[in-house]
Image 1: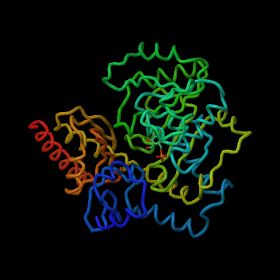
Image 2: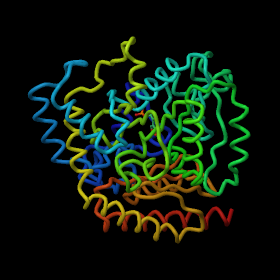
Image 3: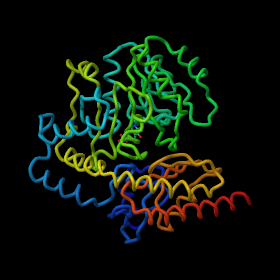
Length: 405
Ligand SMILES: Cc1ncc(COP(=O)(O)O)c(C=O)c1O
């Protein structure tokens, strides 16, 4: 609290969550976080989904330290670690997605994909879906339903409905949106369509899975009309759902896959995996950024890829999934999610639940009535059980209180 008083003089840039509880974090060990007053919290946020291989991961820290001592940045020059990461990533994806470009945050990777789509069909329509989250910078915000209203330049205001940015209904599981409804909406999109941006599971909006037919149908349409399918796996990629990539279990054939968060092992790293014919579109343009593909983040990514390739990690994710699913099923609410990625909607504003859980040593991500629970993949299942039991207990208390009002 004292730190927050002091910070009032200098610091801006808190999320709505952070404004709810004055906690200052100082350190962490795997799924636990410690605040400046030495209280411990079970972390169901993985440091906004990035520290998903655990806080204070010694393997990542050791490698990053060694890399820092030798080379921390050399712009877009080739480095051995960059080449190794390209080769390792391509082993995890379909063999056609074998060209890589690196950035340092998800939004910049989305902007890069927008640039690609524009180069491909300059005046074509660009499609995204209701509830989508692809970032908050002007271009990415055009794809994002949840972009901060009123905070974008007029030309980029999603409310203005720019003619070539089209948002279609997202057929969330159980939403009742049918294949033919989506088909009709797609027919009305002005042709040609240049690109379609889609999250295989909407993360930020609350871990919302689409109907099973959705991604294969989109992929089929893209093949038929030569549209670039951009699958945004910034949230889901890197075993969050129990699989290395969420789209791979579907019959989906993207032209571009976006990655970030987990793959950086807690350091800023994002990028695009592209088919070569798509990557060739970039030949005439300079698309680099200062920190994109820096050796330190790539070294962390290389260790992350090692960790992610261990079958024990996948088994751990599935064990956590079982604990989350079975414990959360004690709530009177529909629960969504898989792996280390769960969400649900309360029937009331969740701010008090969030604050109470902080007092009880559990950090969650609750925005309005939507709860997201994304613990590190390396979490100890017994600790997650303790945390999720506290979550269920606290929600029941608030639920009973709200029912009495
Ligand atoms: C699917 C998706 N795309 C893009 C972004 C933007 O990433 P960043 O916040 O790293 O800029 C996010 C962030 O949560 C995301 O979940």
